[in-house]
Length: 398
Image (cartoon, rainbow, N blue to C red; front, top):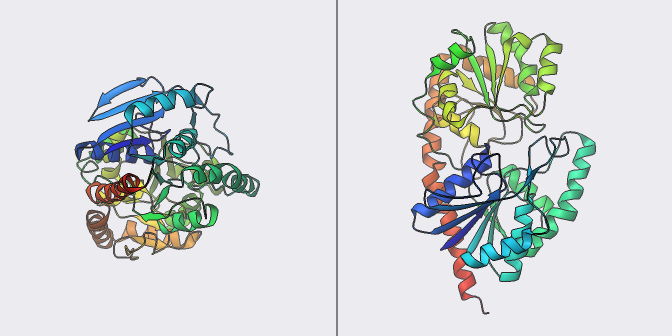
């Protein structure tokens, strides 16, 4: 097959969807398919690059301001008068059998949806982030954007939509009903090997952690993953484990958790290290006693990578987060209901004070990742859907 992978986010830009789209693209190429990556320019990354069997084209882009409306992300915006013409030439020359889009609210997704409609190319769309915001005024704006901007573009290409978890499924069914050609349940995939072998002492020395128990929290801090619940759980945690530290590893786009820490008098226990290179993540995982970062919106890549490293995970999430894959509190993860700060504190204390429990949860979580979430398994499921879409196009009367 000739597969186009589209994502405004692509390495060297960090982020979960960025790294997943790269891993899948490399997997498609390794399986013998021709792969073209279309993405937005980022910093000094080359406009054209060939590596790992991929052809990567980075189109000129400007960075949108980091605002609450943009979910505090630095989003690259590639739309300009020349984009449709340049994209048409690029894709016509490549002659794609199928397009795999990442992110429903990116302009490159919308532009390739127009192309797919005109050329009759089938589309698979991975929705990584829900257009939601805890602030009511922004939530209304996002609903409006979904209804009047995102959904009409989805209707153009009528993509098959990848469902990564149950919350995303509910969101897609609610917001985009009638605008897609069905759902493909495929969980997020991770490489369970690259997170191993880190040097935890290096991180402990760098941040003066000593032998303190470490609650690691991996991922960018945005309104949807604000770390406020973790900070609000800290007083109860510190009452039992007074030397515990909350180590937040990711770019801080949203500072409310730091303000809350000062108000609660636990600022001394919070260490926000900022953005960290992917190559250093194994060191931070090796330094962790426990990991917790998703705040009531499901489990994502960072959580699964922590589990793959054997780190016990405390998660405010539903047991049915992954359809057909059982999460069991106290067995392969420590679960509490989303929004339950007392429950979050209780699970953190259990992980910090019961080494035998923490070790067993870490071992079982690692086994769960190997059974269901490895890139090989997820890649095979993506390729099965892409093959089906491409075959249907060939069989369709012209």
